[in-house]
Image: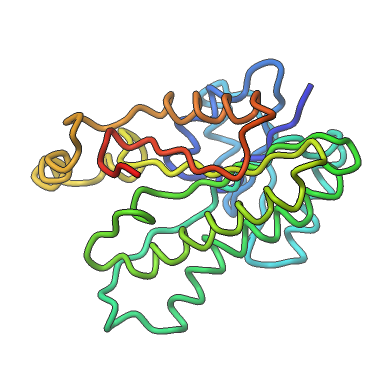
Length: 237
């Protein structure tokens, strides 16, 4: 049984896809800062998963997380999903604010990837999947900091892919647009209608489509260094 470690497990999208990932032949390992709440959510929704509380901005807690994963046999698939949103006009965005944003959206993935790779290299198998956003390619007003953090993540994944290209390990990114889950559920209808006008397919995505992309990247040994776009045509390369 292969182990999937999904960071940011308490987020809306993560909760929406957890049930679809926690099936054979995978064991789902979830981490978030509020582990008790996530554990209760999994029990209430009959999601088979192991949960560990960790602050991924702290190296010591990331190291403790990966020691915990070793009790299950280590990490075969790492999904770097931890992230926070941020909105501020560029002339208001301070360097300290951007630094804090990068700690969560970028450096948490760096810490986790660096600790996952030794075990993957030893096994000769590994899949690293990082979660980006359509905003990295089509920014909106006030998203300069968020855009920078996700753009950095995509570039880092391409570099990782090259470094481990001959060791049975792939590294890719999924950049998704507006999904019918998570924070979108709290957005007023008038704003939702405005967002939808910018999506050629004229509807929001389903979390199952993210899971389909994850499964593809897990199963494909010849796809690496790529960014898969799931956005209904909102941005086209």
